[in-house]
Amino acid sequence: MTTLLLARHGLTPLTGPVLAGWTPGVHLSEAGRAQAEALAVRLAPLELDAIVSSPLERCQETAAAVAAGRAAQPLTDERFGECRYGDWTGRPLAELAKDPLWPVVQAHPSAVTFPGGESLSSVQYRAVTAVREWNDRLGPRAVYLVCTHGDLIKALVADAMGLHLDQFQRIAADPASLTVIRYTPMRPFVLRLNDVGGDVTGLRPAEGSENAGGGENTTGSDAAVGGGSGTT
Image (cartoon, rainbow, N blue to C red):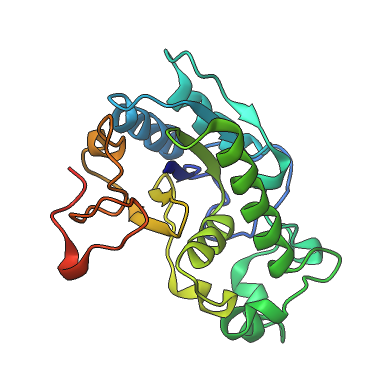
């Protein structure tokens, strides 16, 4: 029952109007730093077994805010880095919306390979592979944080929910939001999605508990019939 907390980086000067991608030197804005600090305060009651980050500055800075005062310090895994958008990198979204590839990105992302970049299906593959390896490394009782990017979070949620990648545009991941997935031997459970507020103490299972999905069951992999009583 490994619990993965996915945090998107905070706002940057490019977030929204420009597709930053792997543009170097994109740091958190003042608002983004405030978001990262607020996320750190929210997560302060929760012990983290590891903090892992994309190599890009905006994620490193968000992860550093969460790690302040903790024993676990950020580790970098390039597989959690942003999608390599190739020729789209650094261009205004308003301009990209006129590109013939744009509607394909919206409706059929599994078919998309960005010119000079990588495919969204390969992004999902590397992200899921990285999560599975970290789950194995940290163990079934671990609770850990990965600070990454919006499209990676959406791709990981789609995988956890058994959705085709073409459905991942239905998922939202706001700046500094928290998405939580618990991995059990049978299936993942999406505990929180695009969460921007609220108590986190219930995200670490009680000692001896095998109840992953919040239902009254004993296997940890069973879904709660009727919805269950929650995880807290």
